[in-house]
Length: 193
Ligand code: SAH
Image (cartoon, protein in one colour):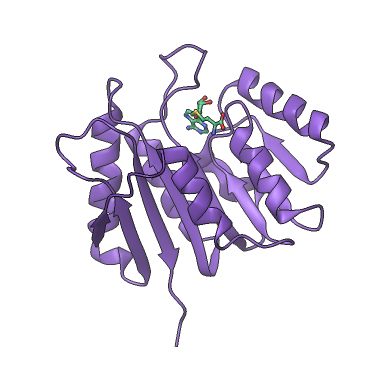
């Protein structure tokens, strides 16, 4: 596992840069935590109308905000599900090109509702099973709210497991134990030779 720090970006812009480098029109992406819909809109624009974005959130208000943003932008190639990202496989039957997780709580809403280690790990694992070769998952994790660092560590432990062979993982984090800034974790399915 490589650990790098790229000071030029904040976590969200870094995750967008990583995605932009690979995302193509026509692709299928998942926004596992759609929140206010910024990532969903970013993905929808990049995959264009010949692609598709599946967006998930447990909060109705988040789904509504995402829907409003999609409508305003005129995007029709988005499906929004008011359900936990653990259940993505119930809704998606095709293989996907990638997924984005922006963990933590919804900015401007109740901080009590946050992503949780157990369901996040379950969701990442099930979405890994949907990935095409070279498909990737980009996870932004926040460590300064209660439970955030525990969630980040849980995902990091999962990424170190043997079952991750076949996936390349990169973590953007300067001092894993101390640095309070958000982390970006990148996981890519390797090509089968
Ligand atoms: N990407 C969003 C911000 C996400 S904030 C944006 O661009 O605005 C994190 C979101 O995760 C919150 O909206 C929260 O409701 C959602 N969330 C928490 N637990 C979840 C779960 N199990 N499944 C799906 N979404 C969840």
